[in-house]
Amino acid sequence: GDNNCGQLYRFKLNAARDGLTFSSTFLQDRVADNSGLTCSGEMGEILFGSGFGVITDLKNGPDGRLYVVSLSRGTVYRIGPKPGAVPDRDGEGVADACDCATADATAFAPPVEVPKLRLGAGPPPAGAPTTLGWDAQAATAGSGTTYTVVSGDLAALRAERGFASACTDADRLVTPALADTRPAPPPGRGYYYLARATNVCADGTYGDSSVVPDPRDLLDAARPPACDCLGRTGGALISFAIVNESLTVWSTNGTFIDRARTLLATGQRQVPIFNTLLDGRDCDPQWTWHPDPTDMNFADAAIEVCDGLPSFVEADKAYWFTIGFCPWSAIVTAVDDRR
Picture 1 (cartoon, rainbow, N blue to C red):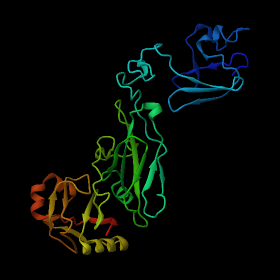
Picture 2 (picture 1 turned 90 degrees about the vertical axis):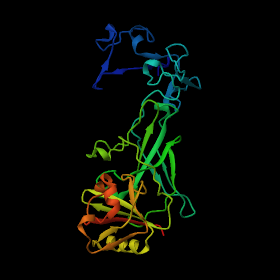
Picture 3 (picture 1 turned 180 degrees about the vertical axis):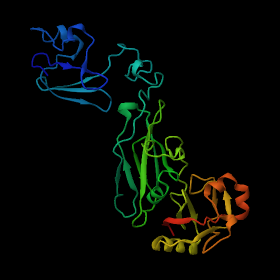
Picture 4 (picture 1 turned 180 degrees about the horizontal axis):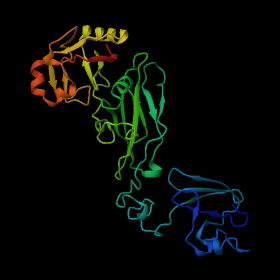
């Protein structure tokens, strides 16, 4: 700031962001020849405001306005668009030329990738929900920005090398916060979380598209189904790696659950036998079928006609529903025991 004028200057960067660009012919020499005219002359193109006295601080506020602190005047100024100065059809303070939704006052820019996802342990008593929080985008994208959170099992993430079994933990959250009410994972296990912002202009990104090679694993391409099993108790979620695919099943069969835990702990393998298959999604959103939670067991061997991959069942449910499913190559990768 200047003691006399209290000036603010606005400089435009070039496309490479390594220099300044000017439209005035007087500034092509990169010199502002103003002589004694401190607040006029060649400064006209870059002068943003004046008359603030001694400026000690500038801040962008959550409402998208610029706040200027004047020490000499003991005043805080708020700078925003002047009503009627530029076309603003929806009246939210952003010019139509810069607004991606000129008829909607709740959005003016597409959301960006959600940064700084923060995880906190739940407050006492023990067992309180785990909390998530992240930076809001209302000031940069519009007040109508909402958030979707997807989650999954870390063991499945490693086995799948992607997000095939991810599910939607919460959808269209108005505030950037979530309380996860799932039981805590067993020791050595954990959940992962990804968040995406959305408004009428566009969906943001979960941030996975640059690292996931399989199009079906791209969370940005389709909304994962709801996590129907988040609050389920009285059984266990058991995950399997099957060649290059995965399967997560809900089991209430105590013998099956106990054996799965032993196989996971020892690294041994047995063939899971899913005798009865049912139509419809359950705890694994990538498949539109699921095993009967009571009718399953492990065996040292099984007939070849029921061996295959989960995708085989998906492609021909009428056939597999008559014989059951016994993937020989299945390996237990996770057991979430909720009994």
